[in-house]
Image (tube, rainbow, N blue to C red):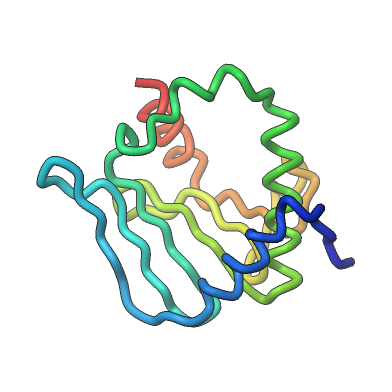
Length: 134
């Protein structure tokens, strides 16, 4: 099942194609400390969030409902799957959540109602959420 994004989301298609090109890793620092790193491994992209304050999630967190966030995540995960790309979110080096092609959800399928979103660690997701709420 292919996911069609509206015209305003076409940059997502460009991003997916760009993410497949590089190999290696990039670390972004803020105030001399690592904020996050991206690791590119062919069709796998790993985002390791080290310092959530860099992203300033707290201001937008209350404005977007849970179901809206989940719907967007499901669309994005399906789009990644359609393009044979896997995006993994880590918290300080530990896997929290994977989206896209190489996911194998079990119980998380019941929660997300998606075959393309895998909860790797409830504990790490909870810690990441706690970090974002600070």
